[in-house]
Structure formats: C-alpha cells, structure tokens
Amino acid sequence: MNRLTKPLRGFAKIGLLVGALVFATVGIAQDSNPAESAGTTQILLSYSDVSPVRASSIVVSPDGIDRDIYVWAVSVKEPGGASGFRVDIAFDDSLATAVTWVPYTTWLAGSGRSPSCPSPTIEANHVFVDCVTIDHVPPFGVQGTGLLAKLTLDPGSIMGPGTALDLTGSYLINTPADPDDIGQIPGVSVLSSTLLFMGCADTNGDGIVDLLNDILGIIQHYAPSGAPPYDPAFDINDDGAIDLLLDILGAITQYQVPCVN
Image 1 (tube, rainbow, N blue to C red):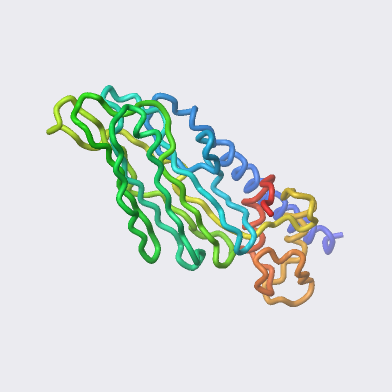
Image 2 (tube, rainbow, N blue to C red):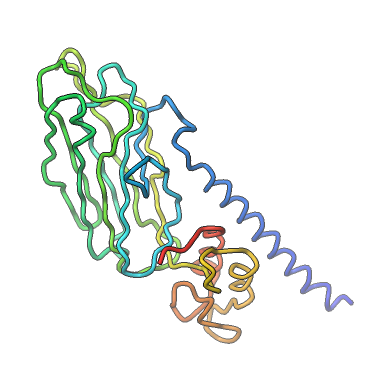
C-alpha cells in the first residue's frame, strides 16, 4: 500500500502545482481591459488596430509567422491634450529576423495640428520613434484614445518563455497654452509592457491549450534527456527534450490560450 501511496502523492503534488499556476496565469490574463483604469492616461500594446484591447502576455506563434502589435494611447484627458509621443520597444534579437515599424499620424492630426514623424531608429534589439505636431498654440493637442504605431515582428526561432517585446521609455507630450511649458504628460502608465513568444502547446490539435489533453500530457511525457517517455508530439519547442521550463511551464502559461496558425 505504501509503495502505491508515494507515487500517488507525488502526482497529487504535481497536480496541485499545475492547478495553482494555471489559476495564477488565468488571473493575470483576465487583467486585460484598459477600461479598468479609465481616466488614467495609458500607453499599451494591442493585437487590434480597431480598438485598444490589451494584449495577453503570451503570444502563441508558429515559427516564421509575422505578428503585428499595435501601440495605443488611451484616455488622454489633459486640458492641453497630446501633441506628440515617443514609443521605445526593446525586443529579443534572437527571436527576430526582421522588424518593421510604422507610426500612425491620423489621431495626432485630429486637432488640426500638422504631424511630423521622422524615420524610426531601429537598432540591433530595439526601436524607437518620436512623433510631434507642428503649429502655434492654440489649437491644443488631441484628447481621447488613438492609435500611435504598429510593430511587425518576424519571430526567427520560437523557444520557451523569454522576453520578445518590452515597451519601455514611452510617453506623451502635452500642448500647453504657453509653448515654453511643453513637456511630458505626467502620470502616463505603460501597460502590457512585456510579451512572450513561444510555440503552441496544443498537442492534440483542437485549437486551444487545455489541462487534460495538453498540460497533463506534456507532464506525463517529461523527458529532459530525450529518453522515453519522450514523444515529439509533446515537445512544444522541438528541441528534442521535454523539460520543466521550456515545455511544462510554457504549456501552463498558455492555459486556454488559442493557437494562431
């Protein structure tokens, strides 16, 4: 009896660990609505160019498939409005073979001021762009919510959890009545600042990562050395082994995340 109890207890501990991590992941993923902080000026990453839907921290992407990420300014209510911005995004160079950066000017031009966006600066592992609007004040800058830019990333190699995009150093510029007072809009928060790219953990091909078929299946085939019970169907990063960090924890962070093919 004791010989059976010990492995059962071990499996139960794994189950509890998986459950805790899954619920923690779901709790983080549910915090995705920018309206939760309405009234606070925000800059966030989104998958949508139609509305500022806060992107999940997990980006499930097959190797070599381009992914468009959009940058939004949300709930700008400063009296002078926004007349310019800087967006600075760092990315893991090992995950990108090409980066295309496109600033948008339609929202900034909504107040009648003339936008000017010089060519973005793209370096080995980060890109930044500054956009301003040119005119005497008033008119003031734009308020509300608007699209700032799009970043297209080509993942060069899909791997386990690791930083792929990190939104840093971003801010909005105000438009004061006195041109000498121009400066950064205070209190701008940066949301969804980090996105993780990884291969899809949908091992049975039903379009979504679930607990029974996918996560527990990967755990059962745990084989860090590639020896049995290794099964390539459960090796989500195709490195010839099924380990804790890149496969098991990678699958757990994808719980209920649909795969993009």
